[in-house]
Amino acid sequence: MTQLQNLSKDKHFLRKTMWSFLFGSGVCFTMERMMGPGMVNMMIASAKELYPDDPEKQIELCQNHCVFFNTQPTVGIIVPGIVLGLEMERAKTDEIPNELIQSVKTALAGPFAGIGDSLIQGLLIPILLSIAISLSDGGSVIGVLFLIGAYFLICYPLTWSLFKTGVQMGINGAEQIISSGIKDRFISAVEILGILVVGAVTASTANVTTGLSFTFGELEINVQALFDKVYPGLLTMAALGGTLWLIRKKKVTPLKIMGLFLILSTIGYFTGILA
Image 1: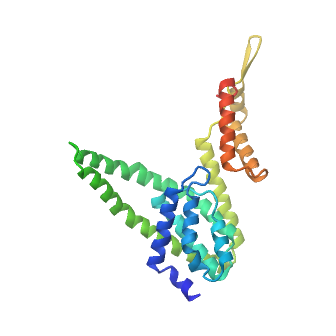
Image 2: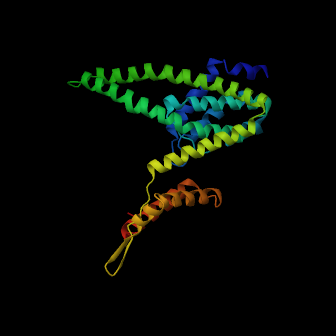
Image 3: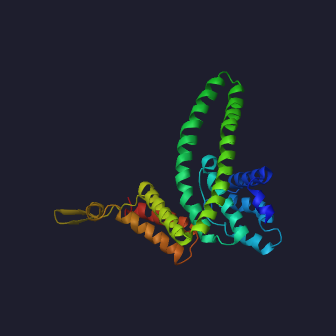
């Protein structure tokens, strides 16, 4: 127990787990799980410290995170930190359910990804690249060295501090949830937040439309225009509902669903059913 209490302040342990997440996420990135392997790699690096005498718990810890996860790694690193903090508290008290940890992870990944993408990919990297390009005039290597050095000097302290903050937030938050008795309500709240985020992302990125039209004499009916008047985004909502049904009821893997979408979109394009 004393060892677990000291882990949140053990810089060697925190650095080891942070780099395990970052390296695992980049090397094993897949369309089905994206940064999920990074989460598993982080749990592998921490399993023996969290459950030193229980191999079964170590296996369960890693298996719980073999699921889809994606965020922006520089700013979003706070989410794996929070998850690690929750897992550390769970190892101490066994009062934190896996459902709570997964809900928190899912709910926070999107918002922090949006912040990180805006600040890092949208602002910092273009600025550093513009400076590096000007320094590389005539083939000079100074621009490349500047880009690598400046990016590391800016992002590493930010990533390290956010990860440590996340671990502490996870521990403190878990203790407050347990002591206040609002665990079930908190799980429901973060699940609702996650659903709202998924709905917002779907509405802003997905767009399923049909090119079907019917002619009756001089009257031409455009099916998509009719749908837009009755319920804008109806086909997109139907596609989302069908996807959730395949995942939850039929247990179809995301990779197979992406293959199905590819086939349906190809057929729909050439037949004119989809536009």
